[in-house]
Image (cartoon, rainbow, N blue to C red; front, side):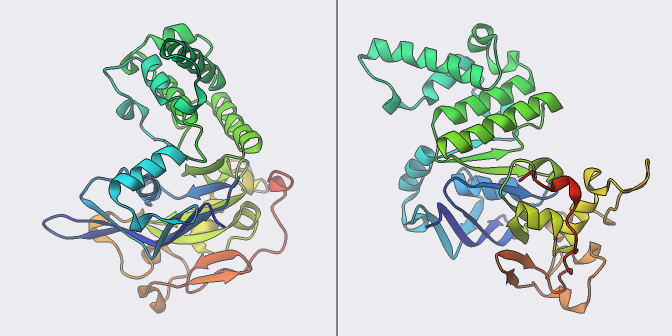
Length: 339
């Protein structure tokens, strides 16, 4: 049984002028202990999809789905209060903008201590307070913050964005979630610090069997840390498969463009050569193309592309395209043995 099973989820922005279909019939499933990447350009609907899973979208966003199951429970049949209680217990999310998510009126120590699972504490109330403080220190050390005293007593505005991101990760880990959704968790960090956080997430997956949904716009970066990958473009599902299938044998023109834009995947090119890019830019929500939304930028676009393509399954490798690519025969060398 899948841990998370979503079929044909759509997210619609409702306003007075017009309704905008920001996410159009996207399916996503995750198994227990799986690390899945969710990839796409900025504006592809990745964060919106993650927020719909957690249930933090406000009233102007309407969520519809043919199936929305969590551990076999149909979330669409639950009330809003029941759904939030269930998801807040089992799912934690690392948001992309930590400064906007942390409470400016409480210290970092208070916020981390509050997030610690009550079931992990024992003894009388004065003993639990001490356990929460010690637990907050351990969590800060786990995410790479050694000077815990200064951090615990600071307010979010007194810390750098990179430190606030680490604090957000610590708060998420304090809940001991079954599923951790990480939305660009290392966006404000240097390369060395990024590797440290990714190694931490990998160890949690291996030791605690924590499932992780890793959201990023950088396909090359997450190939080292994921088992499977789902690709989105402009709110539509594009392709899904194992990490090796997506990187070595992309079937969708957009996925191929993402792979070809990676320097490491083009090691055979001479120095200072231009990488492959698609013309144009991702469409804005007010002017979305009909049918396949990649159509205006796609080098393989034809007349049939004005209709929304159906999903084709090639032995677990799924693609949504009228004219899928032929897989390349030999895998790219640099990915061998990584996943």
